[in-house]
Length: 258
Ligand SMILES: O=C(CO)COP(=O)(O)O
Image 1 (cartoon, protein in one colour):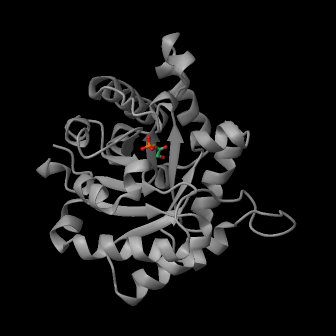
Image 2 (tube, helix red, strand yellow):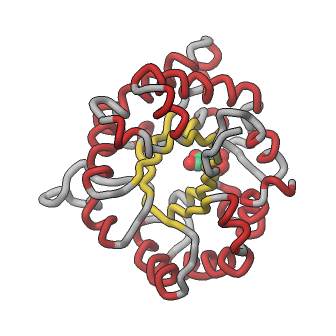
Image 3 (tube, protein in one colour):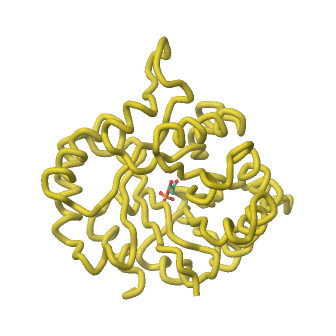
């Protein structure tokens, strides 16, 4: 039995303005009880413009929900128009930051090198990275999904010491399953997540690999979450679309009841 606490994180992507964010987090706060947080860590990743509102709510009402950003600059400050730095996110008391999401790799040309620099920037400022990896449909069809994903894990964690790596969260998100309603079968997801843990053991040690949480992401809903979470190497989910519906997100947090 794994001692890893599952992490259910809602990636809102570019949805919900700061007023909608407040209403949404209030709904989650109202629905979730202490026993939910005892069993599962719950986090939301709102757009940057919502973070101050979410922080104010979480701080003011001592909510147990955690929050973080969807990206981080590789730089600490300076002439980088449009970017948001690690110190800015740390100042807002973010816990997590998603790095290398496939939408950033695809639309913003983020390479493993850039992802690796951002992972290091997150640690430098006390933020925990959620390193996103996963293959496109052509890669899966060619049968290279495992090696492709492991290369992204290795690239993203390059030169990272074990003391930092043991707290990273890896999110396996097959690109073809994101927002398509096509969930990766639980056995297929487990195959890749087990291979990721094997790679982590090779890069660090079995002890470190056993501490790292590996999430699955891609069309997770209340109806399929229990089957996915039953797998030995899956320690949570990164949820896009379904996290925008508070009732549905709460059901996902309560995956054991589904
Ligand atoms: O990309 C995702 C989470 O980061 C998954 O998105 P969906 O849950 O909408 O498929």
